[in-house]
Length: 520
Image (tube, rainbow, N blue to C red; front, side, top):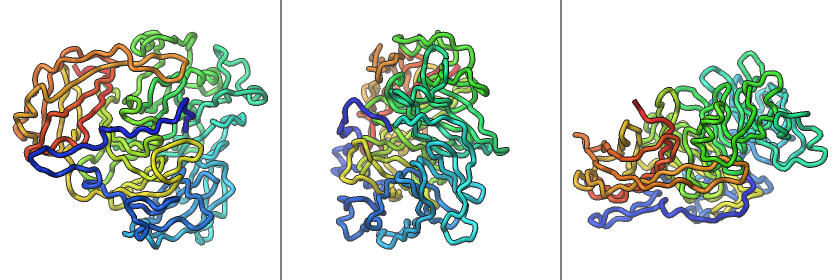
């Protein structure tokens, strides 16, 4: 997680809205996605205690990694350095969950994956494979799967992962060290480029290949707390606002790419580096200008406007349920730490690069959402912990589950870029009169400043004119023609005036599209 200049306990108003006045019914996220508390440190509001049981006494269930086993049990890593196997997590109410400790004595594991007959977790100093040889649900072997990055002893040198891509690579991301001092500086890369002082490979994404080789792939990460692959098997990570990072972001991981945090360049000249030739880092300029001056710098697939779309993104979950989790199959869900929620992301490829939109999805978790996993029934499991940082919610840690009720919310399902605007796909047919009225929509664009300071305000803002809104025959698609689209800018849409065919307002009328490239 990231140390904030201040702890903002802000509830985002766009998380809730109401149906159209002609229905007389209030829309609520709980109507569409029920929240079930499996275990939390305090009794959650919706459980009224009778449908809830805390984790065993003395077990701080600060979940830092989750993976489902082949028999549908859930294995969780916790931040105190243990792995537990939970059974009964699908039960309603979740009052008969059982707990079995699988492993202990780990150094702050921040991920968990069942793979090749064992469980893999990233500890601070290595990627570890844990094996149960005799079948008693207790790890007998703790094997080093990969190591090679430096730990100076700095508090923020987290290691996250692993996650598996389509090529069989295991990805690990390494947090940058923040404010290295004294002996920590002595363990940093000697004589680094441009004077940036970090431990070797801090701020990098690494892969362990199927052949067992650890390879540095890409750089420029600050606090890469979330990893996840899309349906094509391409890997992404989330980063959190701070120095060099204008606001929260989602990035496509691939070889030779630099994202934003300049201090990761300390390892640029190390053997195996995929980043070469950076002689100067532009600072104090808008991001579109920085991109022109810094060829290795690549924009995120999605920017999350600060506070409006979260304050500290974490894990990435692909909805691979084929519709069991509602109308968003193939999209990403991204955990949110400070606001104790989950956002949704739609991605598309334009000119061979990913870009797309983020949307609010679900608020009201009992604590900070650090890890996400999809169950066999399509439901979402959220691993919670806010240790050391502030978040919304009444608990410090726990496990909660979201289940789709079968009722489809009225939402913007997809937002695609066109040559002269955007095409919106709605989850339900729309009312033609409201959907084709340009006044039903508003759009503003902005970018950010690339600099070494903490975060960035939204700069170069412009209100854009929506010239027309054209409805498809099935009344689910609206094409907006918009003046003034700008590449490498975020385009924030408000669709407050749109109604469904039966008069509903959008549950979440806001969308934020990162337009890196216009389609041809």
